Image: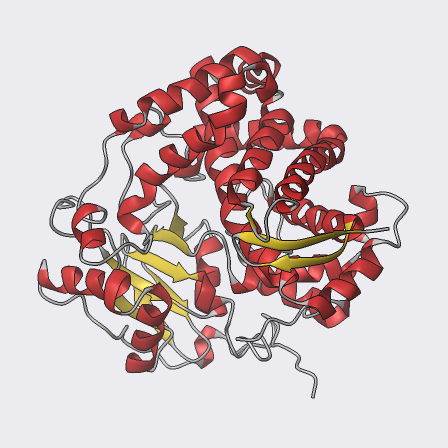
Length: 472
């Protein structure tokens, strides 16, 4: 039986819903946040953490605590209002009621030393003048790079796959994580900064690892890496890490971009009113955090989805090989390829949490209730559950490759929120939606199509390949 999700126009309006006090609590000071932290990282893990509390309170909106917290985050308030359905979560995109200032990872803000002692654009609210300058700059870079994007992508994929095949010819299994990251680093340096890592052997060989370490130290207090507990809690989640531990890595990549990305940097200064420092640090953040970091998380899950399903491969292969060449236009005609990318983003969004702070008092609506939110309260949406909303998605826990195909599938894109906004939305200076939203999904689709044009069969998981059978 087909499933048609309710559109915003047909969902019950807030005036017709009962007003309810937000359930849940933050517990006793220090003790409540600390216990929630242990549940989040240790006893339950994030998905179970949010799901169990949703079941306990019979509500997709409730109060809880999210890491980081006690003992050495005394100036960080872990209290949040969790939003776990599509309707309540969508409030995070309304800049009239939501302030996005310094909430990338909740109330915790890594030291600005990690970004050259500057608050880069991702930490700025839409009301801050600098936000428009930076976002305009990044959007212009993406537009200018469109002419070389596909050619550079294919060229870098060729080199990566050649290396994978050579390694696999000598072994029954080959890890692809580091090769994927090298590919991503080289590709994004070229298309975003106009800088070729091959000009500096040290950067070409280890630039991706430098970014890995820089990213890790900013995010370690908020993520789990699966080492033996309680060592992880004691060593990784109890305090913020200082920048000096990765200052050498960051400065190496910074100097590389400054030396070899001069044309892109000059564009930021002359056309968008940024200082050279502002242009470089913002460019480096988008390159390292948003692009390299996001794809490093997302691609393994996408590859595993394809490599573990021979039937899906056959369908994707048939569609991918209908085009004479890979272009942005040809990939837009591959509805199943794009749907698989969308579904992978729905099931495993690369950024699991989205935050926003109430700009003023307002009433927030879920599917079944209305809640009063006070100015200054922090809202937190866990996207992995939001995009499994059973009132929107049929069989929400099941990966359905063709979910987003056809008219009904296109309608569901209204609820695909991975980019800090719906997939049908448009990034603009007045919102915080990812500037590269469309190019991200097109790039991922191009990678899928490339693999299924090059190989007749792929076997592997989220970290390694066991078979890469070349097409005849």
